Image (cartoon, rainbow, N blue to C red; front, top):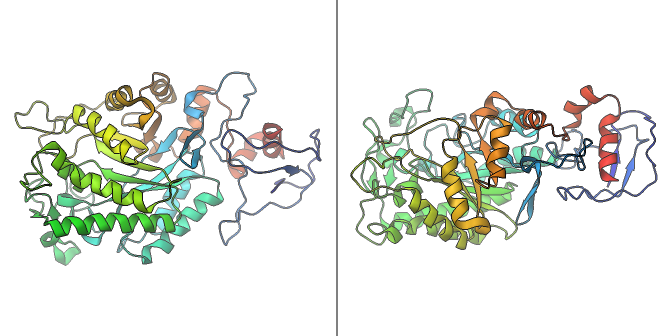
Amino acid sequence: MTLHAPFLGYKNNINLNSDIKRFDLASMVTTTSIDLHATRIAPAAEVTFFVPAQHVPAGTAVDPQSNGKPIPDLFKPLTIRGVTFQNRVWVSPMGQYSAKDGFPSPWHKAFYCGLLIHGPGLTSVEATAVSARGRVTPEDCGIWSDAHVAAWKEITAFAHSQNQKIGIQLAHGGRKSSISARWLIKGGLSVPAEHGGWPEDVYAPSAVQFAEGMATPKEMTKDHICEVVKEFKDAARRAVDAGFDTIELHGAHGLLMNSFDSPTSNHRTDEYGGSWENRTRFTLEVIQAVRSVIPDTMPLFYRISATEYLESQPEASWQLEDTVKFAGIIANHGVDLIDLSAGGNSMKQDVKLGPLHQVPFSEAVKRAHGDKILVAAVGGINNAEDAQRVLEKGQADVVLMGRYFQKNPSAVGLFAEQLGVEIFRSYQIEWPTVGRGQSLLKRAAALT
């Protein structure tokens, strides 16, 4: 592949005929020469419309740094199975409540593509339902039908045209299904059938209502459990077909897998309830089913509520020690990274919010398991120094941010500036600040 100068006839002191080394940082560029005399922009091959190719992923640290300083952990690449991420600042899944019949809309294209052009190591799309009745709200995205694949491909193709990685989070709402979007009623109010809801078709491990005003779920039969496992399996296969680079299973915040795992919401007496091993059986079956149909080179992540924040309550609940134990088990079942959130499965929870408030959870898992399973920290991370410190101290391997990226889509660039790190940005974003031709020269220098 030849790199093309984005501007006409730029002359410089680079040897135009020299061979260029492979870009070792992210192993994403296979270029052997750079044509700095090119007068046309090279198009990206992954899309049918014209958009310039990004030969080095935005968000990649320049190596070596011009100031001679080492690259901070936050901007060191990370390879998981067959996928390399150029940095460790990732976009957390965020519900947009903007889909009709599960199909991602132009809003989703604008939102996710507007984030990924700035170079996060991974951009994950929102919780995406594996079945129509598994949506949390009627406006949730879905991937329960083959018809959804083409719409998702438009987004993944653009991501890949920008040399960026994009993941999907697969979810089933369980007893939190058929509720209103978050900005309508805090906590969720059951949406009636006449408004597009399905309150009579909500299922969970036990017939335990999450909150007043929400549907009382029907207890799932064993046949229904098998059906939902297959829905996750089929959704994972579609996610691969749609071009996603990673899959995350949503086992947090009171959704179906979380409610199976916890004794506060699982009151079953069969092989899917009672003992710790029985309660986690369904989740492990989902993990095994998904891992069996995705490529060995594809990373599989799991989001978990590390605690239900019910330590002050007398009844049994899922606590941090359960999460630490479970992390080792899911690692043995093919999960590569565990994403540590918390809460969301009980109205009695006592949450202590604040900066880095969930980092102790990721640290506990990291201390217990080391590199057996990678760990992501999320929650209250809003500046580069804190994020870098979390990685330096071995409290996590990556950091995830949601609301901060909504406020600052160019968070990766801001973090780089805060840490004094020189990074590559998208050509269109970088050139106004560096001058004519300098973006290409910057890449040429890095590749020599």
